[in-house]
Amino acid sequence: MESLKHECGVAMVRLLKPLEYFQEKYGTWTKGLDELYLLMEKQHNRGQEGAGMACVKMDAEPGGDYMYRERALGSSAIKEIFSKIHTDLNTTFSSIRNDVSLIKQQCPFAGEIYMGHLRYSTTGKSGLSYVHPFMRRNNWKARNLCLCGNFNMTNVQEIFEHIVKDGQHPRAYSDTFILLEQIGHRLDMESRRLYQEGEEKGLRGQDITRYIEDNIDIANVLRSSSQLWDGGFVICGTTGSGEMFVFRDPWGIRPAFWYRDEEQIVVASERPVIQTTLFCDCDRVNELKPGQALIVNRRGEMRFEQILEPKEKMSCSFERIYFSRGSDAEIYNERKNLGRSLVAPILKAIDGDIDHTVFSFIPNTAEAAFYGMIEGFNDYLNSEKARSIVSLGNNATPEMIKEILSRRVRSEKVAWKDIKLRTFIAEGTTKNELAAHVYDITYGSLKPYSDNLVIIDDSIVRGTTLKESIIRILDRLCPKKIIIVSSSPQVRYPDYYGIDMSHMDEFIAFRAAIEMLKEQGNERLIKSVYAKCKAQQNLPKEEVVNYVREIYEPFSQEEISRKMAVMLRSQDVRAEVAIVYQTLEGLHEACPNHKGDWYFSGHYPTPGGNARVNRAFIDYVEQNY
Image 1 (tube, one colour):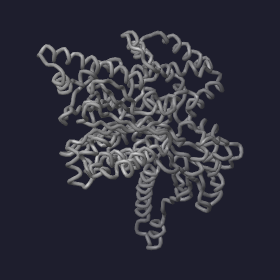
Image 2 (spheres, helix red, strand yellow):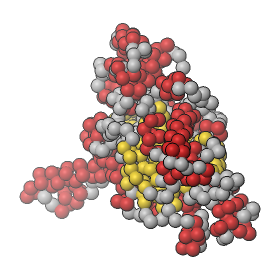
Image 3 (cartoon, helix red, strand yellow):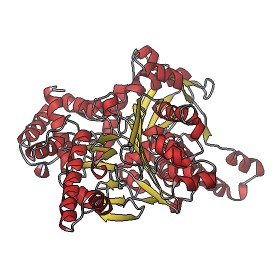
Image 4 (cartoon, helix red, strand yellow):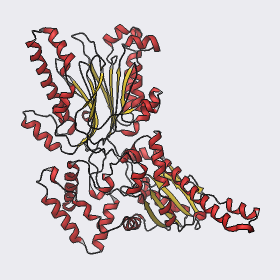
């Protein structure tokens, strides 16, 4: 598929033992730092535009800093950040590296709380200033805030206007800056409340400071900050005094997992990342519940607070299909099931001719679905063999049975991806003739003009790569027919919770539906939907209906797929081209615990999603983007 950008990946490590403990047990105090590196590197798939990390020292003396941050841009940002930290350790601090008491005083990244972030921008804003974590400084340790997250808010304007009305002046108009200021302001209010409470108890000086740090209620801060939030989010934060939190949206749209043992608490966006880094079993890694916050106070005591009332769980199905690492046991099986469920429509597309069909996949994320598809066809073929043998009855001979049993599902590695060429093109060269060579093929892998080629991908979104590269290069093998199979349903609607799809005409399914409406002389439906969307512009988001769904209602999925095949087949392609899509029913059967399907169905889990998709359709009609 075309590479979709996804916002983002998070990781946190909270050490529950002093650094001296790790130096004595493991021979190094850097265990937390090293684990953060692994957690980030193993989530590299989630963000390659930039990365950042932060560290908090729990017991820094007055006059010394206690919050540190390092950020970098580009796909090698993780390596750059940790190389710099370790270079400093091996040069500036080499003489005291094993003296933990001095290291804690002098080395910036010798602390107890570590936070990491990998960024993919979905807003079009780039540069180091937009790379997480974000920091908000103050002279009081408890009022310092470091924040990062995997999130996208649909109602930034509403939140912005609310905090401006409260008297704040955000430095930038972006959801990250606004959330930092909003949470930071509430943290200030919580600190002020405790200061007054401490004064009433007769506390002064450092005693009142310790009282604030020991009693600050992060749950109260999050509750008062998040009442207006509409979107998918996992927000990670830490204060300068050592309060740590991870907070997930009430629909469970964005993923978050945690692990705890006697030495540490670890958080990441993906389960297998924690399993691999810490060598722990799957059942030791837990999913944070929707609307819930994991909170760790400065004493290392962990608790869970229900910050927002949980809604119907709508965790993102695209996480399962494409973004998350396929090494997760559940995700691997779900992807296989997606491929297995496509046997019937593929059989229809090849007219049941398995013997003259080669099966393959587009590298690399579709590989698990390919294995499931092959298993499904093996099961089907075994049933066919059994029926054929039974039908022979008493006339069966060893030769006849051998001939029946010799039938095989033919699979080949047909397509290869040239990673270096893809990187070169991404760095600024966008010529179609170069993009066409991102993929290569295995010559001789099928019989020219005789074999069909079935090739599965995880999704078909824009269709650009298919038309400009994949179909044309597959056609060089001279197949009789090319069947492109998508293990996900047709992507028809933008995402507003963290994936870079925002314009309607990005989607080949939408373009196909619009073209068919025009061919049928039904442009009045386009105008009708536009009028309905315009009429809702000033309504509260809670009252907005997704009328864009009406664009697809006149057509079946198969009709749209046929039109897409015509649109994606260049004139110089000789083979017949067909497209087979997963159904919504097949998706939910394969991924029963992840119902978030708004990309395919238009059923947005939050009111802000409906408001944004209507706006996107208005922009499409008015060409205002």
